[in-house]
Image (spheres, one colour):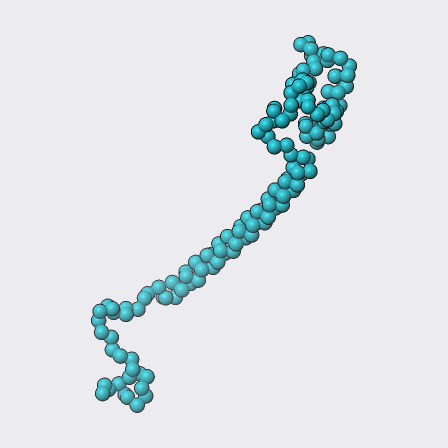
Length: 151
């Protein structure tokens, strides 16, 4: 916006000072500074009781009523905190991916074992009879003195 305001319709600068400031501003932005930081470096800090681009007599508190002003230190602390949280979440995702891969490996091994058991005839379930049919007692087989006869 500063560039637009300080150029004429034909694209030339309004004065030499504006040209120098805009060139310096572009260099600052190219050096990975944020636009706001670059602007502050080239043009200077805001003056108390003055809102840049709105003239004298306008209070910053009235213009930026709904916005909380955060200091650069506060925002960098928040950025650091968010980066730390991001790294933690990435580590969790990596651990979950490894766990899924482990389960896939176990699933493949289980499928192989089931295939081997099926090939050996272990796929039939012995007929245990109906749950309503009485089954003979196995107590005779546990009583060596009793040769299968009932008392």
